[in-house]
Image (cartoon, rainbow, N blue to C red; front, side):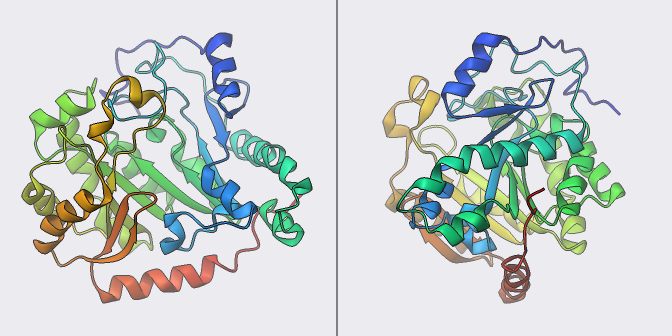
Length: 346
């Protein structure tokens, strides 16, 4: 099945120069066809050194046991100025791609994660029992780079990860609703489904994301309309707002209207962080202070039933839950996944 986001595009395989750039940045590219990668995030490193967890602890994630990966390295139909990833010349080009199969990606991503963590085994700050636990990953965040639903076998990838006893956290820009429908049809239900929302109207959507998809807003709202069915299947659903001062940190009433219309389990309001390649596209003033994010969030949430359950000034993020029943169900999931044995060594 194809989609307008893919049709008419051309693909050129990532060259060795860009591949080396990613390797130097700490990525481990996996698979024969060079479209998947793993990177150890700062919170994984923090946990292994005895430090704090990431904000996703609200969902039961133990950062030290989490693999941050992508099946679509350097491949996205948006070119958001706040993205801290580098933009390659073929970033928008997906048509004609040869893809690695999900089993290969999962096996190689686990192997790569263990190799990347191997150096922590000799670190005196690493508790040995926790290090052994980290080598049995329990969570996979499909969010490292690019738009993961451009990978045509995303449903099979989620099923492959789930079958190995790991949770799946899928972050999508929502422009490929047919892939989300396929996930529902195939019973490929992620533990969390995050749909990023970047504007409140069609014109702003294309402007702020520099989308190659002209009907991006309509596609995103179509994806948002599927959240209720994902939740019915046991998935925790999340609308994520990444907010950039002077760009899309405006019209809080419009964001509240979207939240009220689609009613996800959670809403995340995330302040843009002036990091990586985004520093070449935006001024540091585009990054909101936590106090500014709180002020904006209050306006949004006051127009909904959502209540904050986490305010993280370090990650500049506020997580709000729909109601007490949603929070109760979340705690039940947290309890279950906290006991996951993870994917064992072979």
